[in-house]
Length: 132
Image 1 (spheres, rainbow, N blue to C red):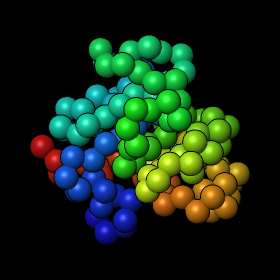
Image 2: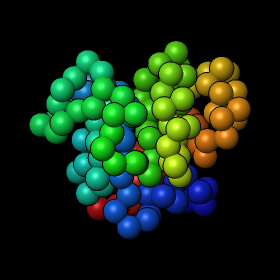
Image 3: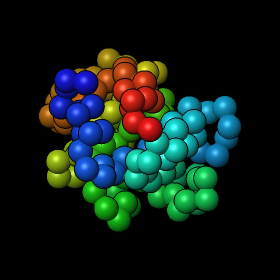
Image 4: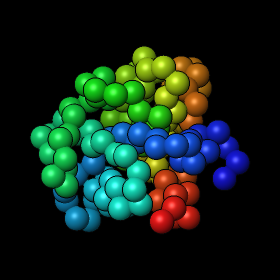
C-alpha cells in the first residue's frame, strides 16, 4: 500500500467510520463493518436508519460521531455519498475511502472540490487483508 489514505490502515489504532453499516447479512456495509472489526480495527457504524449494528451503537451521521475518525469508509449509493462528503470535509485530518459503486462523476468532482484526501473505487477489505 503506497497511497496516503490506505497507509492510514497501518497507523496505530486507526478509527474507521463505516457509512452504510448494517446488520443485513448480504449488504456490503455490514460485510465490511464486520470484516474490519474481525481484523481488530476500531470501527464505528454510521447509518441514520439503525440504532445498533453488530451490537455496537450506531450513529445517524458522521457529524454525530463522538471521535474524529481517521477514515470514513462510504458504502452507500452516490446520491447519499454526496451528502456525507460535506460532513467529512468539516472534520480535521479525515480521509474518505469510497467503496466501488459509491462514487459517480458528481462524487469525484465534489471530493476534488472539497480537497478531501480520498481513495475511490478500492475495496477496504482487500487493502486490509494482510491484517490478522
